Length: 566
Image (cartoon, rainbow, N blue to C red; front, side):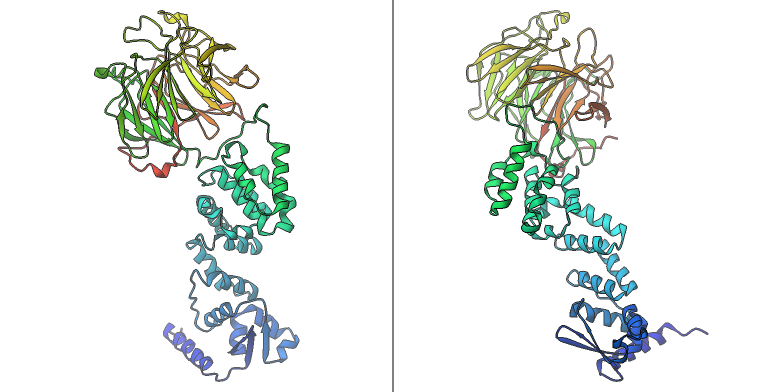
């Protein structure tokens, strides 16, 4: 017959009382300034370390006093209690010490309990310590994965932690290279690298050049300030030398590199025409974290052939056919708050304009046509976001509608379009505007004439995607604003005219369009691979819409009015 559990429970209670009263104890364990009186037979039965020691014939096996130096008194007390009671009182303050002690003393069951505890109790205070313990002891691939995911998901709160120094070189490098690292901006990644180097500057300064290769310098906004704030002169010299050797000067061509998904922002798709004749009033939002388009809200005013640009968290919708509001209507949507406000009307009502912004100060509305579509315009209207007023500036050299506009550096480009009444008058010509001179001049022409294309900039490259000429196009190319040359790139998977394009995370997103059918499909271009891949679909097929990257993380936009796309 088997004994009842209550029997063994009572035995354990009685043995614990004997220990607490100091009865029949035959072994003293000394740990720092504390002495633990225990029973040899019980410690040998419950702790492999003591069992091997007492059975090995070592000197300690003949003594009644043993000194331990590799564990803390708190951890040893917990292990002794576990041996006597089978109970492990783990919490965030003691679990790491107990785990180290259990591993050293070979108390496997307690070690497993500690690992299980941390699987659900990793936090900002202990994650780097657990990371180091797991790497040193190789305890659990599951724990390793949990800690790695926690660090990646909470790096925005961890990059300035002094405990980041617990990571070894391979660990910090892996995190800094991670595409999904959750940070507000790339400057936080650089600060994390510097904090790691400064944790043990004498031993790590020689690793500076290797570690900084993990930083995406293209997306840094405060590099000079960060360098100036470094106190250790040898580190300041090392990073200054790296920057001088590896970063291109402004007059040279910058390499393309991808931004991390988290700080890269969200895309907002607005306006356009769907399968019904009326403009699409729904706003959809896409974030790299969910990789889905979601209904955000409806707009009181919707337009097709609308021009879209973004300043901060505000998306400006300029002109376009807006039903009863006509072609002069413009508005601004604050993506963070959801507030939509009408802007003063255009001086000349237009649709099919190219719209862009420069220096977060001016919104440019370039060319276009009127409701009759009987002519193309050369006039250029500029909106001052500070004064809230429109003004006319120097006109285009050549009138054009269904034109693309994009600002790169301190120049504004007007690209392609139609110059006459007939849609067969599409052109490949490009004009460049100098705001200091208030003057347009010719720029090198595209390889392919087109109108109603999509355009976006990555670094010094101005990309033009799809559009129409004799039909919808798959052709894509970019203009290098430094070398002043056009280069063809991989073609779209699907021909798209009236396509909306913007850049996010160092990638291009081509959204919707028309090729005989209104499209809800999207495509994503990787400039490093020179490859288009299929992206998630919109809810509503639409063409002539606008898409804009807004510098918010997806979690900051919490109001959704409907379903997610598949």
